[in-house]
Length: 92
Image 1 (cartoon, rainbow, N blue to C red):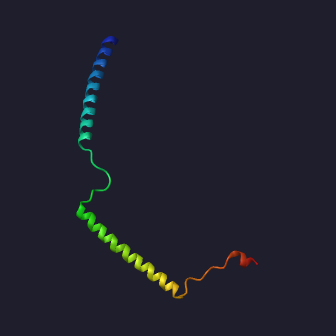
Image 2: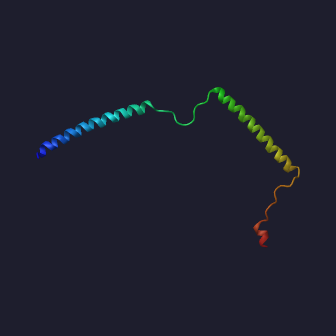
Image 3: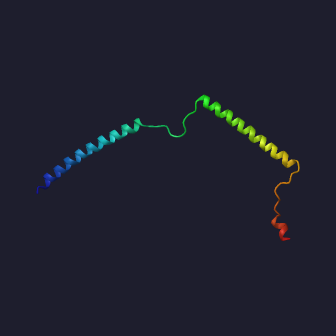
């Protein structure tokens, strides 16, 4: 068994493996650079943005009307939920 010959063969195999690894890494980097995708939400066209704006305006108008109606009902004297007795007056 010739140790020097074995070492020479192993170094040659290591050199080939390093070359293959470098080639695979270069291919991987090239593919990763090509396939960069945007993350997150997709963009909206101006028409879509206007449609959403109108829908949300109607939503908030209805929401404010409901809140005004609830406040008017409370102000008109309809009984609200019963108030809990404070713990201090209960202990006295």
